[in-house]
Image (cartoon, rainbow, N blue to C red; front, side, top):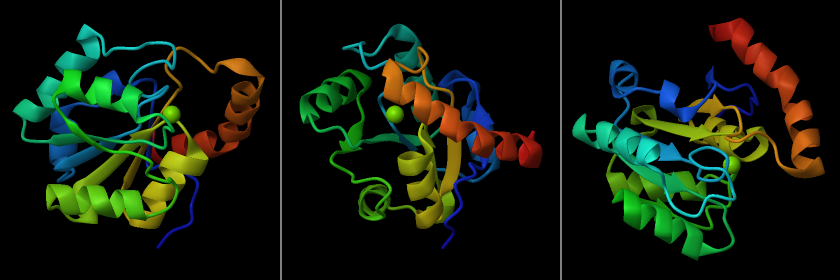
Length: 167
Ligand SMILES: [Mg+2]
């Protein structure tokens, strides 16, 4: 188990992640955070870009699942229904249980799983604790509100470390 807060890879946006890339790493399950990762919080339905990205993953045999701490399951359900995928809600990231539940659902191991998210203390930390590949993106639409600006400033040094290590 690793308690690292340094993501394994850092990208500008989810669209930078391709099925070919994931296949080359042996990934069969891609867990995705929803808010600020696949859509800004203000966006209520998935747009054409995210739908075609998810379809591209599916076509390559990579299962996509939402792993969300969202308090309201309505938002997550709406997105998943439109995208034709399932989710683990109230995941309690960075706890390991949501990651485990998702992997059991998909029937894959931690080595075959990646987590994509925008936050170190939930998405990345939970991924590292669970032994899954931690992919981080910049918040989609930019940080919103004072707290998110502070949070993203705090994340900067860890992102710099990820860049040093991998880019
Ligand atoms: Mg998020």
